[in-house]
Length: 594
Image 1 (cartoon, rainbow, N blue to C red):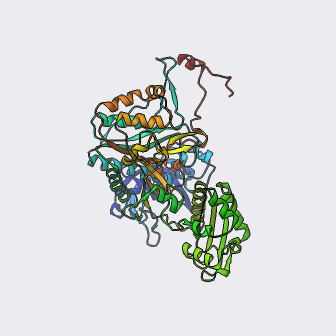
Image 2 (tube, rainbow, N blue to C red; image 1 turned 60 degrees about the vertical axis):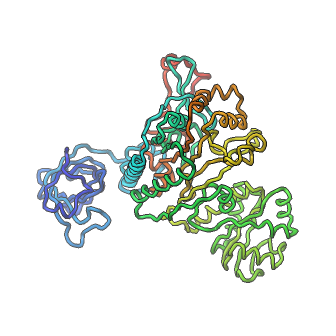
């Protein structure tokens, strides 16, 4: 090794030792001849003193030293002079007095600062990803991710799970997002697909008798991107035989407790993780991935609204809609322009409008400033304030529309106002399980039933008889793990009998021929003594993003794609030559435009 110690490991116990260090010049400061350098490697920073008297023969090297030069030095570890210690550094009580210096490689001026975490155009950060990853925050994110995955592996190994790899080249069975296809050279005209998830493979492993499987699996989906999506991503894939919902939920809670203790011991995470039904989550928070760190829960006003002659209320109720709202603390003084901004946000989420009520004095309904004062009696207004738990100075936001629209709008407003008021503690991780989802979701555009989760989810036992008569009332044995308003993962008890799987495929509109073509091998496997089994898949990227306090999964992935699924560093995807296409028996449909 070119170094005897790592930069971030030096402590007062090393004083008096002669060490060899190697790394990058993080920062250079010239103090009238004596140069101070913060030397950085993957473990941290240490201050190095380059004294011209000790380095007389290397004065020119010291003068030409610049940020991001790669250097090796030999020196003595000494205690920093009293009053110059740096409490922000783990190595802040010592420094290294260099006696020899070698520049291993120089570096041109980087396109952005590395030693300062200032905002830079993301395309530049993606193009020079190797430089961005040098930033201490980014390196810390990769370290956190590594510790998180190691903790998961250690935990599941202790629970007797087997780490089993499944193929990357599989059969295309599109039933969700678009597949990435790979042409086969040795089987002209045929294609592999990259797995969106190892779902069928892990179920087949249960048929194979492995009983407990997991994998840190690479998955691929050709879908539109956003902050928490990438075309290729990583998930913890897990399956267990002879298990039911409670077994998976308890296992996941114990695993996440271990992860939190190892990765974020400084944070709070209330236990036990609460369980919410899907219906309860939608009613209280407007979403199946609620942030339960704060209140502002949704309040139903249908019974009060029904007693009024207010046209907007009556129109919503007569068409089967709902009237609900949230109470925002301390925002009664919002200006007209601020209220109009909230109305525009509600409209963007699908609402026809938004009613507001500014509460100056919660004990005096005459102090409420709102269009509702013309349509509600004093008694109705006081009951509304009581139901919201409104305090003086609060702002009420109320929506009358169809239930899906009201849920979407109030969820959006709730998140927006929580962000503005900064009432969600960033050091609290509020986990919860959402259970009791419907098995199917009606798709009005396609005129068919879609799976709420995926077609391999088992229906609730008590609802099996409704599959052929009333699919909309069938509950699914599906569960999600949620943290701070983010879905970390989904799972379910699986269908383990062929006859039941065929019934579900039939409800989803698959023909018998279609089922045999896409899933014939899987249905055959279910005939051969498939045990009852259940599983879950957790997003590793999203989990790391949340634990690192980042807002995008690109910040916890070493080499991500941009919003257009493009790798700016490698210039990928790229054009391939005609010879490669010919070898794969492929031709382009239209002329390629460079």
